[in-house]
View (cartoon, rainbow, N blue to C red):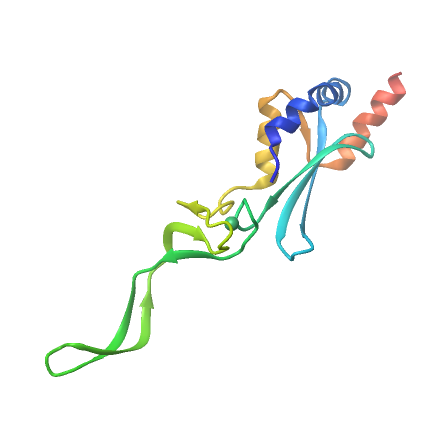
Length: 158
Ligand SMILES: [Zn+2]
């Protein structure tokens, strides 16, 4: 949905400022859904008490459009009906199905993005954002009370 790297670059000065003063910025995570009912995850980056630098969002389904359904593949076994020549006549009850696999294709006809593995399936968004900030040399607080404590200590020193 938005480019974290770009946002970090655009806010580099204020991020570094908080890093120098308080040892980092504070991250908070929430899940929500938009007006179209698409679920997304959001991480807010707070520089100072109540001062949000920016927030990043990620759809839980398709990263481009938020669609929650994908076409996939599956090996399955079912009971069928055959004639006396062992020719298939009709399908019957499915009795065994293996784990679905990719490529997965977004079922939204306007999108159709293809994935080898399901998007966002195996990554922790908060952790992703945290790691990106750390790579840029910005410390991170996940616990807001320790962050506020650091701010207080800094204010008292001034
Ligand atoms: Zn899509």
